[in-house]
Length: 139
Length: 75
Image (cartoon, rainbow over all chains, first blue to last red; front, side, top):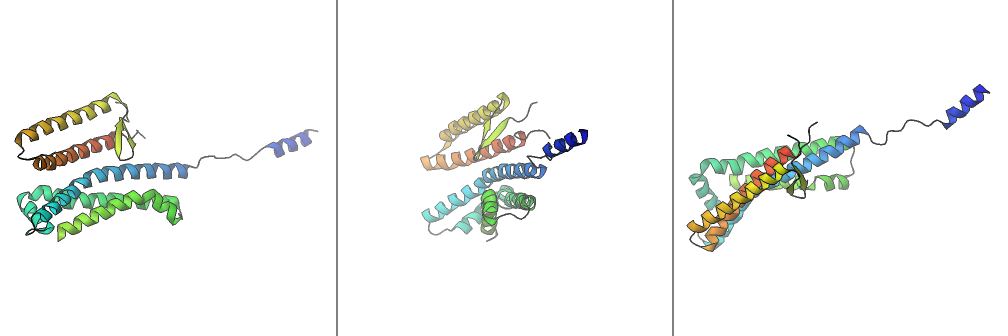
């Protein structure tokens, strides 16, 4: 009798289930952190982007000048702040966002391209903006 | 100090504590001060707007940096 009841108990017993995997939690956290970082990057990169837009408008208003010549004038006047906004910040934020994307990619395992792009599109946008600023500065 | 002081909604950090609200108010007060100061020194509306938007972006960037650093919970 005892043996039968034990067998019944065994059949009733279920395997221990982990509803939330540690890995899933880590992935969710890294996506949230990457989004926070991309927002911070966006605010800081908006400064050089705004300067570029202002200089571009100036070049339209004064046809004898161009965006590049206006930027060279600014660089000669304000050497350190232009290096900070057009060289240091874009490099730092491009690297930070690249690291975030890499971390999400590795935590996702073998992610579906569409889902992966959906979660990191803002980071990619920030990297593209950083590269554009660096190209404009290097002209 | 009990973190987080801010939470992110979209591209903005919204205060969730009294200290967060104080930081936001300080940023807003500084923006008003910059606005009054620039208005007294500007020669035209465009001159004022170009400089004021630039100052606003710098205030927003510094605010977002503070908010980012204080929006993380302790591990």
